Image 1: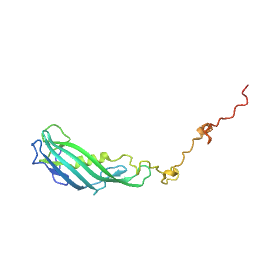
Image 2: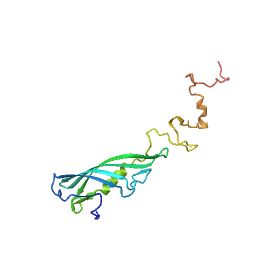
Image 3: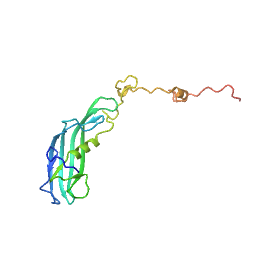
Length: 187
């Protein structure tokens, strides 16, 4: 991996536990999102507070990072397009390997761990693909474009090709309406 900056709000020192298997340190970070994270209907806005509880554990292969993240995403409902804002809780665990060790996704750099990439990736992958304002959101009226209420959900128009089948559906008395018998039928 290429070397990155070793300062910033997501960088934590690990020099006191490097190569000391079994040692552990805990940190609490309060960080503002440096940019918008997410590209769909919802995202974590730039400047949105992100609370991160982090545990660094020294293991034989490197520093094992376990984190719990609390933040909030904003955007629009995928059905009715009203604004929504919901809390987001994410957990992740990543190994920051020692330099020169086996290939890892993340590497310890000058006895520091940079959490920005795993935090961002965990948040973005946890954002809902089709967010809704409520589980039973009825969406928009296809004819008027107005937001529907649960009582105002229109009945879908019947395709004229299927209209003949409507005569076979039960009427209000619970009995099926049957077409009239053909007069050419012989007794």
